[in-house]
Length: 52
Image (cartoon, rainbow, N blue to C red; front, side, top):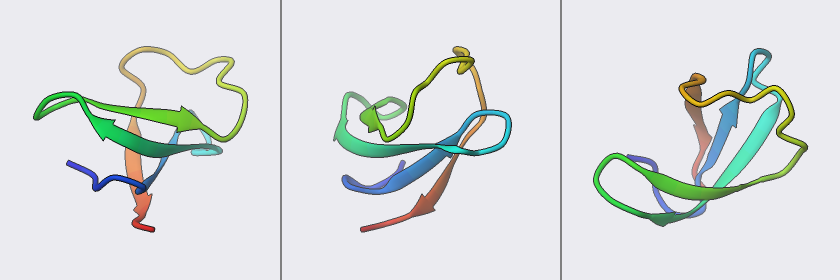
């Protein structure tokens, strides 16, 4: 589970950056995207990039 304020990357190229805002449960976080999310699908691969 990524820490609050961690940066995640998502999308085919990993170009969509998402900042973690809150943990909803043990498997789900809510975040804010730093770029348009067009083309991002449910179930897309997301990886932890860094912790702030």
